[in-house]
Image (tube, rainbow, N blue to C red; front, side, top):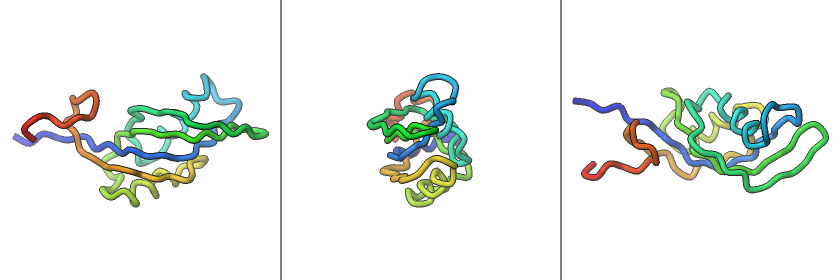
Length: 112
C-alpha cells in the first residue's frame, strides 16, 4: 500500500506586507506567502526582522510550507517558485523533505 507523503520546504525570505492588510503583521505575511502557487499551506512562520516603509512593512521571515504538487523537488526550483509571488523576495530554501501527511511536526516515522 502506497502512502502519499507531504513535501515540506524550510525557507528564509523577505515579505512585503501592506499596512492595510487585515489582521496582524504575522497574519499578513502568512497570507502573502500562502498566495504562492508553490504553497499548499503555511505550516509555520517566524518573523525575525521588520523594516517600515511608506505603504508596507517588510519582514525577514523563516517559514515551513507544505508544497503544492507541482512545486518541484530541488531547493533552487522551490525558491524560484516562492519568489514568483509579488512581495516575496530574497528566498533561500534550506531543505525540502517528505513526511507522512499525519505527522504534525514533520518528523519522520520510525522505521522509514
